[in-house]
Image 1 (cartoon, rainbow, N blue to C red):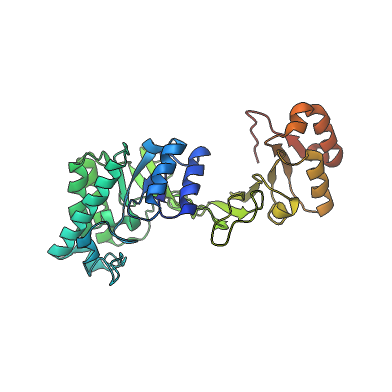
Image 2 (cartoon, helix red, strand yellow):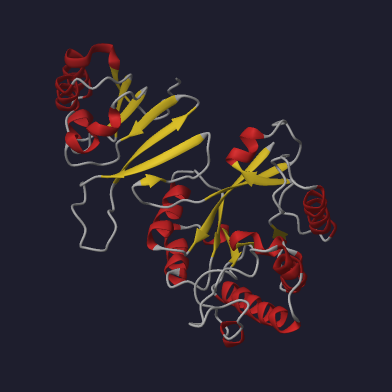
Length: 351
């Protein structure tokens, strides 16, 4: 099975924008989809251009959050509240998913056209689309959105979620299958399967043929970076870049990966050992940077702390190691012995 990892919600916030950009840099995602109507949408476009992933950004059609681009949509009471903001409710009930009045359908069509046009005007070449909270898969919105996407030359559209194989009602399961067949018949199906990582892990068959899109939601904050079960990535801020001004996010983080009963810590750049110590306890492997610390010094702090960890790998080497690799390695081993090692280009570690 070939996987396509898509980072949803690009443009939603500064924390999401930075997380998406860094996920591209780390090779964690293959593609992202952009909300074009949010206050930080244009900043997201500029970030994609400056970080070199402009060609991997699709459109995340949004009919549920933020301020619409069009007056007709802002004035529609089914789609928006009294302040002209998306109310995020038309798709909550079965009736709204199936049927909408003529004026609301026209408002959806006009708003979607404006969002598509902005996406194209901003120079994105990918021509892939999905939507915020899956609204493009519901009949009431799909009948307006799919013809527009075809008219504007979009080449792929996200499927309706079809991985779980869970206890969906028969009519709902039948509609999902019909929608996905319709996309495939029109040459718009972006993959053979779609769902979250949890869906795939819970799927009775993981050897399904064809490509599979997995959605993730990158965001920088203290807490879970990915929201899927089975593979958990948690961010903890540190003080390498100081304390931000009030209301602004931290810009330096340590990451804890948990999967298949194992825990691995990536320190990132940090200022003081005490910032990362609470997250190290019980880790099977820890990666500690030596660009701003000595390996022997960190080994001694780890030993003195009494924290129980497995393998200790030092990376992001500073001048001390670059100028005296053997001497620094010997000094660190004098403290922790074979529990520690220095990472080299191409190193692979297994748990």
